[in-house]
Every structure is written in structure tokens, then in C-alpha cells.
Amino acid sequence: MNNGMELGVVEGRFAEIIWEHAPVSSSDLVKLALERLNWKRTTTHTVISKLCDKKLFARDENGIITVLVSKEEYNMRRADQLINNAYGGSLPMFISGFVKQHKLSEKEIAEIKRIIEDR
Image (cartoon, rainbow, N blue to C red; front, side, top):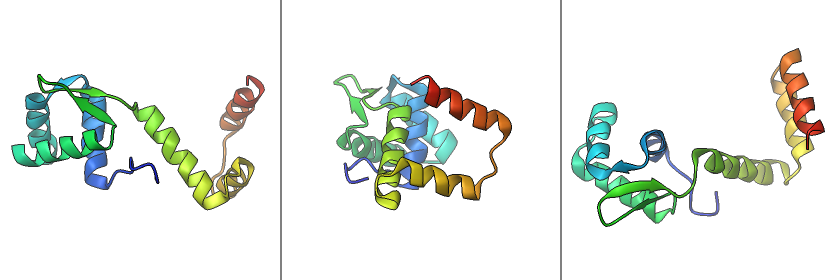
């Protein structure tokens, strides 16, 4: 993403933890990162700072981490960027490429039709 929000694999795994638990204290994140990622306290605080610098999350004066950009919004921005970069911004070209590679079930086709018709 050109907006500075792109996450590497490690940052993404940690962001998932924050999205799952926010609002959450820095000290609780240190414990969660140790349990799930085997990170030291310093690593956790470094990555918290990076994610806050990217404006995905915020840390207040009490060390509480809150969400500025939801996981859903982040994923939508990633999808928009993919469509813009790989398909020249054309959603129909993206869909065409996707369905050529993936067999859609009747249920998925019906759901997509419903979504389009409900707009």
C-alpha cells in the first residue's frame, strides 16, 4: 500500500492480536506476544510503536492501545490497492481473473448476486 499502512508478516501477526484484544494495555500485549510469538518485551514495544506510527493503532498516556483502523477497513484498503495495482482499478477485470482461478459454488454466486442487487 502506498499509504504507509502495509504490514509485513510479523507486524501483521501482531496486529491480529491487537485487533482481537483492543482496547488492551501494553503490558497485556507483552504477555500475549510472549505466549503467541515468543517475543521479548522490547520487541513488543518496538512493534507497537511501528504500528502506531502507521496510524493503525494509538497508545494513550496510560499505555492502552486502541484501534484507529479496523481490521475490516485495513483489508478493504489492501484489496483496493491490489485492484488498482494489478487490474488498473477495474473491479470487473479482477472478478474475471478471480473466477477463472476459483470455482464458485452456487451459494457463493447467489450471495454475490444478492450483494450487487442490494446496492
